[in-house]
Image (cartoon, rainbow over all chains, first blue to last red; front, side, top):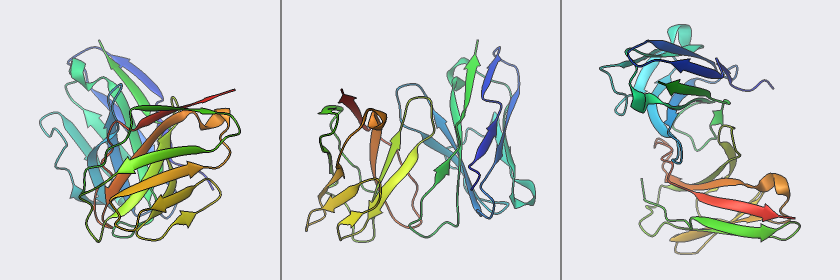
Length: 115
Length: 109
């Protein structure tokens, strides 16, 4: 079974630039999550999709972050404009369906460095 | 979701059992106990979860106390590859995975 795919793996940008990350979840997984993990901390949920609808985006900084999941499969997370404090690993995860005690499968993450 | 408390770090000798404790004294009746781990430079990996009963799978065993206020993750024969950050999380079926600082487990040769 193929895992969660993310690209790029690494990205370096200057502050005020824009950046986008891509995630392809495990086939058949209805729920997709984006997490931000700052160095030394545990991952923090940014947004959760159920199919192509947003379930929870309460911790997404909406003035600069946006995410979409067109057609309920792939997803992109965008930051515009980036700030120094956005330097982190951005993790994508998927699960079969929300509302059940099932596991989330995580991708390898994209490490973003903002200079 | 209930707050969990874990030791910051633990050591274990290779081949011995690693017992990682977690306190969740405010856990509610519909909250599960989940364990994930994160090996360096990788995404978190699901290990096991349970509600009331003890659970075992190919990776680990989960022992939950009768009052459900604490639990222990057991890696029966730790290897160097088990060196990772281990996260204990309490959540409902619809709840978020809220990661804390976790326990850094170091397995020594």
